[in-house]
Amino acid sequence: RSVSMIARAGDGRHAVVAEVPVGQGPLGIALDPAGARLFVADWHGEMVHALDAATLAPVAVITVGKSPSGMTTDPKGERLYVADRESDTVSVIDLASLRRVAQAPVGRAPFGVAYDAAGGGDGRARLFVANVQSSDVSVIDVDTLKEIRRVKVRSFPYGVAPTADGARVFV
Image (tube, rainbow, N blue to C red; front, side, top):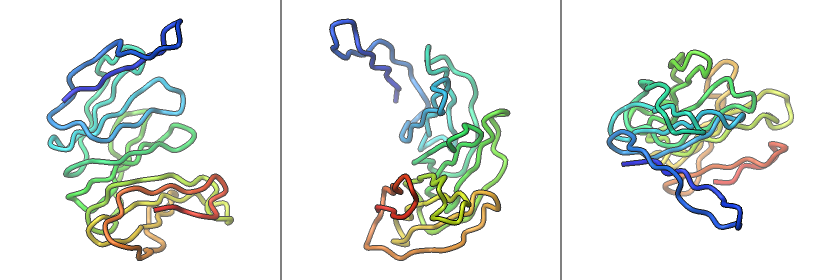
């Protein structure tokens, strides 16, 4: 029920340098592109905790859907996308205001989330969401937050990772 910060010392070894309690069931974790804020999904609390990445001091608590799990930011650090596993949605958090601004419906029990800035060749950024119970991947247009495709995969996908050029996605 905590988040730990591990740092490299002068001798090259890594050690825990800070640890703070976070929510009832911390699960997913994401860092903004600038490295300034850390986000921790609270599986049991239906919220995301925003922390100062340098000190682990609390910054905000953001309400999201049920059982938040995987998270990712866009490359510009404007939005955080959170898989709400038991709500069958992805919450969209504006990182300037630290408020949920939208929810996008996806398949059953979303877990892993990945942002694809390349957009598969058409220049439109996409969000890929691994839906565990429906055994598929939702492809979301990040501008409209509409599901543009759902791709059936083998059973129980938990993670998803697109290549840098967006040509392939691994599940």
